Length: 82
Image (tube, rainbow, N blue to C red):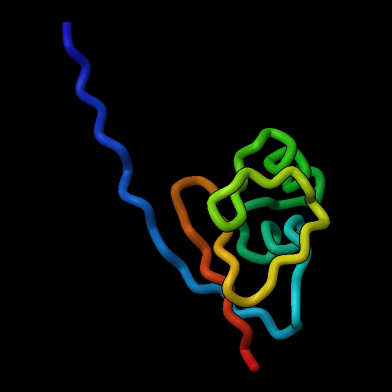
């Protein structure tokens, strides 16, 4: 028996921030991926979140303009509003 699996197409979204940086855990709440800081921490510790293509386990990582945060088949492109 063969099982066919089709990978979900990745989505891209732009995220505008008004500051020079935002912490990774705060970003996950800002983009509504996580409802609480504890949930954001769990996603990060469970290695679900990538920053610029690499798994990131530092919830305090500073995310800046030009970074790409990937979580749950969505790539979030960080842009500065200024």
